[in-house]
Image (cartoon, rainbow, N blue to C red; front, side):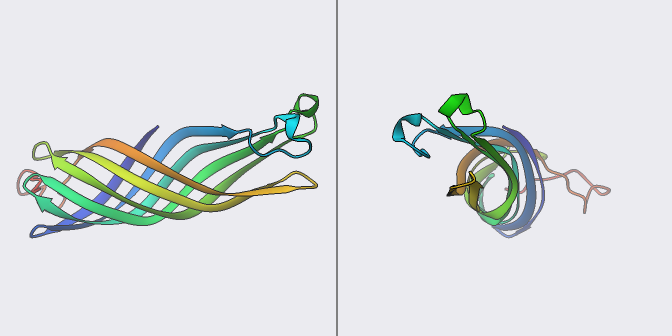
Amino acid sequence: MFGGVAGYNRQLGSIVVGVEVENNWSNISGASGVINIGPPSLDDTYTTKLNWYGALKGRIGVAVDKALLYVNGGLAYGEIRHAYLAALNGGAGNTFYKTDFRTGWTLGAGVEFAINKNWTGRVEYNYFDLGRSSIDYGRAQSTWRDTYSVVKVGLNYKFDWATAAVGPVIAKY
C-alpha cells in the first residue's frame, strides 16, 4: 500500500482542528471458498480486491507537548473488484466479475508527533465502510458488505503558508 495526504490544520491553544484528503493505491485482496452455487463439493471461490481507496476527512485533536492525539471521520471512496470463480469445468462459462467505484464513510484515530519544525510522523487507524455490493450469476446473486480496517504509518511535511514570507515554519505540537 502506498499513498499520500494533503490537508489544513488550525491550532487554537491545545485544540487542533483540520481537514484532509488522502488517496492510496492498495492492491489489497482476499478470497473465500465458503459460499458455493450448486453442490457443496464444487470448491467455488469468491475474491475481492481493493484496487485503491481514499477519504475526505475532518479531524480534531489535542496537542500534548510535541504530540497530537486525534480522531477523524468523513467520506470514504474506492474501487473494488469482486469475482466469482466457479470450479465446474475449470470455471469455463461460470466466472463472473464486477468492478465498482464505491462511496461510504470512515472513522479513525491516531497520533502525530512533531519531529522538528517542518516534519511530523504519524500512526493512524481507520475503519472504512463502502456499503453493500452484489454480484449476479444469472440464476443467483450474492450480497456482502465492503468494510476494511487500515493501520497507516506516515511522514508529513508541514507548510506554513500564512507566515512563509515572514519566517520559518513552526510545528507547535
